[in-house]
Image 1 (tube, helix red, strand yellow):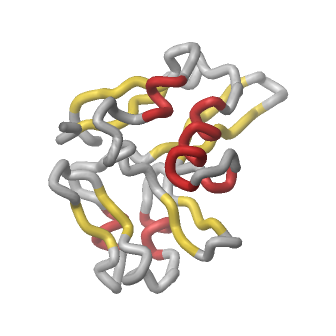
Image 2 (cartoon, rainbow, N blue to C red):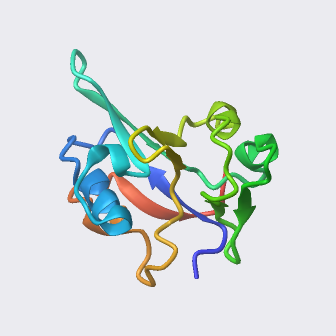
Image 3 (tube, rainbow, N blue to C red):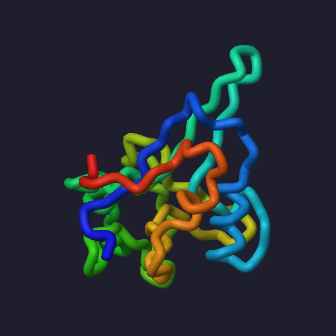
Length: 142
C-alpha cells in the first residue's frame, strides 16, 4: 500500500489554512484540534514563511532506536508506529527525531506521529485535502 513512502512538503506553497492539521486530528482523534494532529505548521509571520513538520519515514528511524521500551515498531508498510501502551513517555523518541515530528499531547499524555493514515486506503488525508499542493505523497523515506 504505502511501503517506502512519506509525505513530502513544499513549504513555499503553504498558506497556513490548517486544513492538513485539522483533517489529521479529525481522522485520528474524532475532533478538530491542532494539538492532536500528527503534523504541525510553524509560522514566521515577519517573512510570511511556513515550515511543515511531519514524519519523514526515515530509512533508519532514529526515534525507534532511541526508545528504551521498544514501544515503536515498523508496520507491514515500513511506517514507524508508536505503541501507546508500551510507551513510557520518556521523550527519547521526540528528542531523537531529526525533523521535530513527534509531538507530545499533554492532555492525552501520549506521543503522536504520522502513520500515513495507515487505515485509509486512499492515502494520507492531509495530502488529499491540501488545497495548494504543499503536501504530496513521495517515494522513499529519508
